[in-house]
Image (cartoon, rainbow, N blue to C red; front, side, top):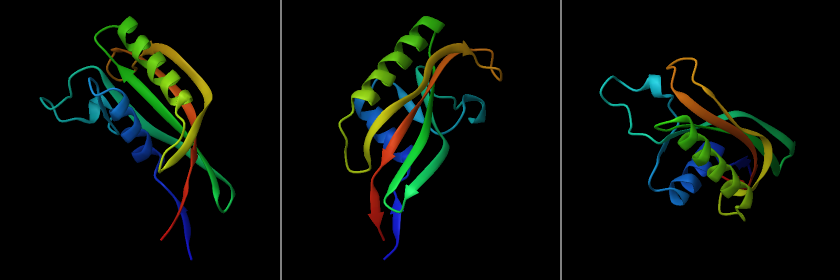
Amino acid sequence: MKIRHYDPRAGALAILRALRPDATFGTKRLEDFPEGDVPALPYGLVALDGTTVAQRVTATAAVRVAVWADDDAAGYDLAEDLHASLLAYEGGPQIRGFGPQLGPIPTTDPDTGRPMSYFTVRARLRPRTD
């Protein structure tokens, strides 16, 4: 029997989309969208910064969420709300819960010049058998 873990990006995306249906979430950076197909703001990028496996059934992933909004205050407020909501998440089918790691941090996107905020959380992943 093979033991694997759920995709932390897919799990975090599902949680964030349920928490904030008024925002768009994905795994692409804004500059990766074709011209004319950029999603409306607010937009949240969910990325994986690495996974650590301590035992076969225990994995923790660093999940980074970057948020762009109409202005820096709105982006930071959304990032703060998402960060707090993930830390309060009580677990589900893919992710057991989240722990704090970094942020939220307000900054300027070096690629687009737009204001953005980001944070990183530790996702405790559930094992699955294939």
